[in-house]
Structure formats: C-alpha cells, structure tokens
Length: 212
Ligand code: GRF
Image (tube, rainbow, N blue to C red):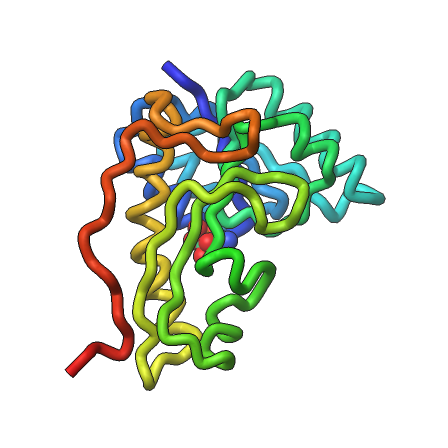
C-alpha cells in the first residue's frame, strides 16, 4: 500500500477529509510548521504520528526545508501532500519530490496565485471561482493541474461565504486525487504533462450568472 505524508499549517480540514476518506493508502504522518494548530489534534485523534517543524526556529528557508525533508523522508512516503501548508518551498525541496508533491490551492489556477484568493476574486468581479489540485513545481502555484472545481460567485458574497463554497469543493476533489494517485491512475509524465488514465469528461457548463 502506498504511503503519504501530509503537511499542514492550521485547522487541517482538508487533511481531516483525507483521513476520513478511507483512501487506498496509509497516512504515515502529519507535519505542521506551526505548533498547537487544530489540525495536529485532529491527526492525533486519528492516531497518526505528528511532528512540528517550526519555520520560526530556522534562520532561513534552506535550513527549514532541509529539516522538513529529513522528517518527511524518515517515513519514505510515495506522495507528500500539502493540505493548507502556508510556506513557500525552496526549489531544492520541490525538486527532491518530482511527481510526488501535491498541493491544493483555493482558486482556479493560474488565476489568483498566492494569498487572499477569495477577496481578490470578489474584487476583480469574476463570476466563476474555484479550487485546484496540482503537482508542485518550483514556479509558485503553477504546477501541472490534476483537477479543478468551479463554483459561482454570488452577488452578495463576502470573502467568508465564497471561501466556504470553495472549501466544500476542495473537500470533494482532494480525496479523488489521492485515490487516483495511489492507484496509479494519475501521474506526471516526463514532459511535465499530467496523465490521467481514469478521466471522465464532464457533462455540462457552469454559466454564472445563470441564463434566463
Ligand atoms: C484551504 O482553502 C487550502 O486550499 C488553502 O488553505 C486552506 C486550508 O484549509 N491552501 P484547511 O487547513 O485545510 O482547513
């Protein structure tokens, strides 16, 4: 059975969904860069080994990433899953896990890379927003896309209501990706393209606002 290590920085709702999803892989450990975050307690309640590698106690990104990789590699995972992990990783860390590092991002990439995606989507007036799961490459939030979910942006949305609508979809697409990866249905080819042996074509368009 494949093994994964999950990295978090906060409440860990995406991590929790993965722990509850009865995946065809074993979650070997959960690692947080912040102590005392909610996600650590959730992982512990599932009897998953947890670690804290504090970015604050490292002088630079290189030494933090080296320590992080040391802890990750002690579990020899097949995949390393960034589930709300809020640190920018060095190229050498990313290149250490080619085709094995996965991230979930709360926007329809390549729109709204980086932070505050929901507030920026509202400010720009986009009518469709969403979330993306992708392989991580050194270019921040630009790695090959595995799956996306789109949601409408409502006229009276606040950052919080839009975030909640997107998060519901994050919780649907993330377990699907892990199932695909751990069954070998999805992989990153050497040309940088995602191969998905199981892809079903979606059957409809999302038009927002709706047609009359
Ligand atoms: C999610 O929206 C994720 O996409 C983003 O940060 C949030 C983390 O939420 N990177 P949680 O910790 O998984 O609840």
